Image (cartoon, rainbow, N blue to C red; front, top):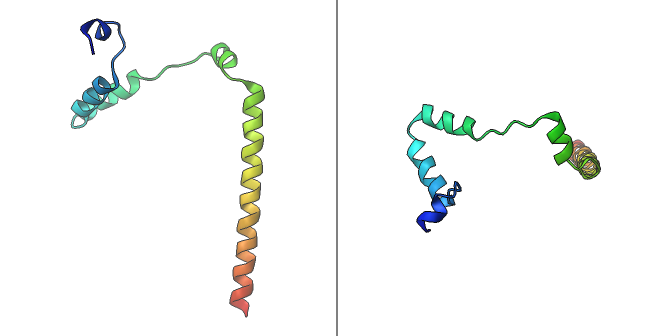
Length: 86
């Protein structure tokens, strides 16, 4: 990577990995690095960033999946209990 690219303010993935590995043994440095990466969003920013229609569709899909999974688990339990009763 060229020096000009490094000075642009964007670290390469290798730089990030190297920095992370250097902090592994130092709990305080790791905690500072972790919290420095947080990006708080205001309610207005979240409203602008989140596609509410897509989010609702994903939530509906996840609900349907969980309900289906729950039904499968109930069927499995019933089958297992029936097999044990025999």
